[in-house]
Length: 166
Image (cartoon, rainbow, N blue to C red):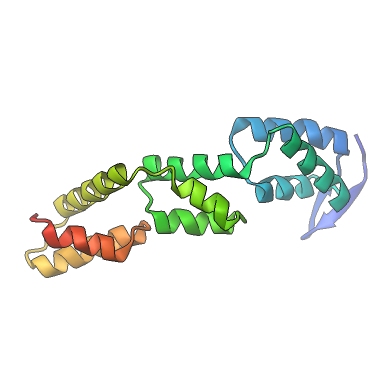
């Protein structure tokens, strides 16, 4: 192990060798799907230089440890199923992760339209049951704000809410 240290935002860290970083990053990628940006940031946190980082990322892609389409599918599907996020929020997060529009579209395609509609209705029913507002307009507005905040398309939310009796 290298004993060289460097100063990064006033934190002194140990710089590790590229081979040590590679074994660590294999475990990091095997644990769950990662974006290229996440992996690069992790490698830089180990104190590696750009050329080492690019070489390792290239190797991970060639060995199929890294695949942004696979990451987009896993991320979109997981956030929709587990967190009940809407397409807008998922898309924004995938953009933040540095994915291409093509990868984002592939990820969003993982969300079944029927499941999306059912989840939207389920969220509306659940939020409606939590609110005790007697004014139906105010109640629907609060429901819409909550669901739009979860990343659902405003026009879709209002369309479903207009038919909702609750």
